[in-house]
Image (cartoon, rainbow, N blue to C red):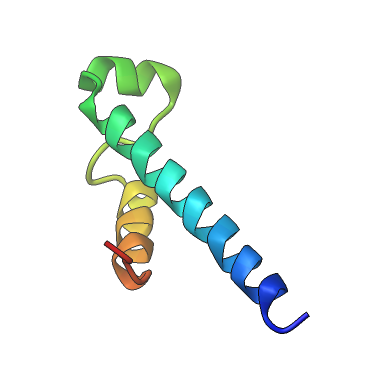
Length: 62
């Protein structure tokens, strides 16, 4: 078809990105001790810095 495959792929990517941002916001709202207990990267750790850089490079729709 004419572009339906492309549009559906983009819609799925948008939904996944929105869900990821929602989860990240929820995780960062937890107390630091709880974040540490579940293995979430601490602010300032190399892993969280990489995620932050990647997040700022990705285009935001909203």
